[in-house]
Image (cartoon, rainbow, N blue to C red; front, side, top):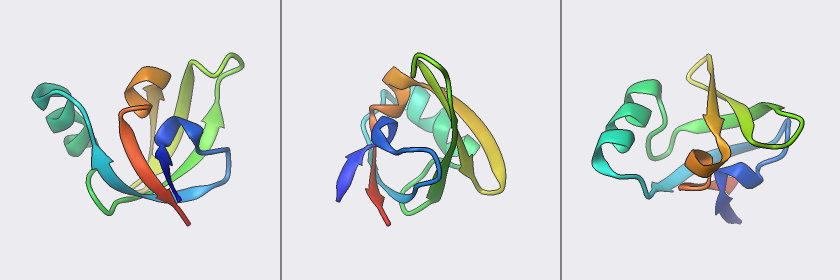
Length: 76
């Protein structure tokens, strides 16, 4: 099932299938490891859900909910 990345629960793994960011943000996310077919895992979520941390390429990266909502991933 393909969902926006902000719907991934803590402990769930997924593979990125598509990103809908403006060019600057897309490039920045690619530099951090968020690219098509990259495996990710949600490892932490803030109390109000405004921010979440994802494990990608052996690094933990935090994203705001509105940025994570523009990345679509297939839950494994």
